[in-house]
Length: 94
Image (cartoon, rainbow, N blue to C red; front, side):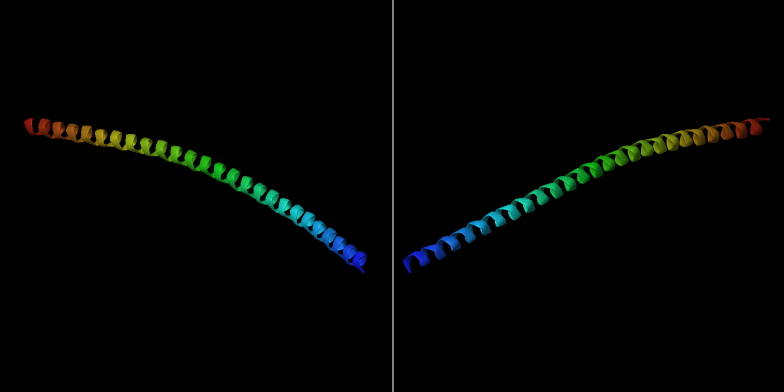
């Protein structure tokens, strides 16, 4: 009777050990999966950040070009107005 009880306890202990091994294996697989997903997400975030920075740089360059062209256009308008004023004064004098 005692030996039967011991055998049952040993079997139960072995089952529990086997169950722990399975749970540890599952836990490790889950951890590996999460680590892989985290790395993928971080890589994607880094890539998106790089694209964002490049777009901001491109937009900054485009903005500067627009401002330069606007300044050139304003200067050209001022020069044209000055020429027109001079021509009007010359006409009045003649």
